[in-house]
Length: 399
Image 1 (cartoon, rainbow, N blue to C red):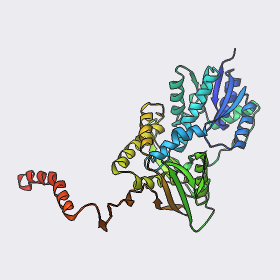
Image 2: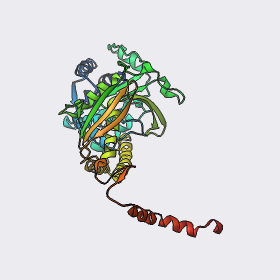
Image 3: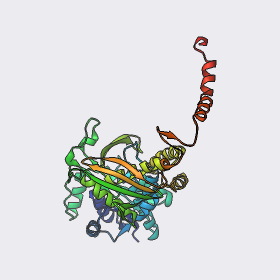
Image 4: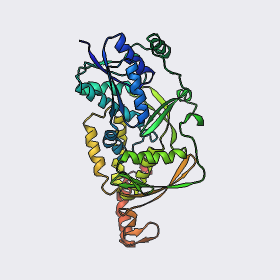
């Protein structure tokens, strides 16, 4: 009997080649699987399914894991205000983990002999897929023709043509990876340290002028309403924010960081929805959390984002960090007001019953209500004791 292989399939050139190559040259029963984390429309999913069968797939499935992606990743990235290197909302990279999880679950369901993906040997995705497959299905064969054969684009196109499959695989000037949490943009400028992407490289262009007020409501850290409109599905709320922010061409930036394989990498991105949500959430936390809650959240948020980016999602410590992040959100409830303008935005303020500025203890810079002038004098004297002792012992003339 032929061996079964489940191929992580997006319908692009690399995975199209893999589907036909594994079927024709390697004589596998090829099962293609599109793991949709929110980056594909219904029409796109249908077109990808049709292409899979044209390329020789025995069966194609679309695995809808958008809600899982939110519940097990996006939610915690918001709780942790996760921006890699203070910039990138870890959009496409976090999606790959959940695509890999869905693919290996499906492979185990149908008792597949192998799994395959079309990643090259020069990026992070190969590690995310390989590691997830190996951890959840130890010993399963992992097949990666594009990486192992070091194939060129021209070779793959010619191979498909020779086997009767012709499609418009025109190489776009910019590589676009669209997802629920953001869209990455790669091109010739991202390969050089002294250049940036031109305006026309970004999928979302400015469509309006003037200003617009946006309000985001959070309940225990989760986005619940946009401009007063409540959403049952958090993913729909995210799309709404993205739709509004994209009209203003908000959320463009360039991420420079360290890849899993050790080299530096640059990628452009636009992420109006995720950046507006994360920064609004962070402002609300400044008003509702204590200094030390914010401090330790920042430390763990940085680690959580790094581990997620570097394929460590299955490491048990991630569940520990998620539990901590979840526990900090009990009072993170309220409304954030944002002014939108072409290409940028301003966080105006918040309204929350948990706002720690609303206490009866005092008004900063204006009036103290819960202590006296003498209390402050004594407090300041004690606070300075250790420094006074240090400088008394370490006198300049003693050095």
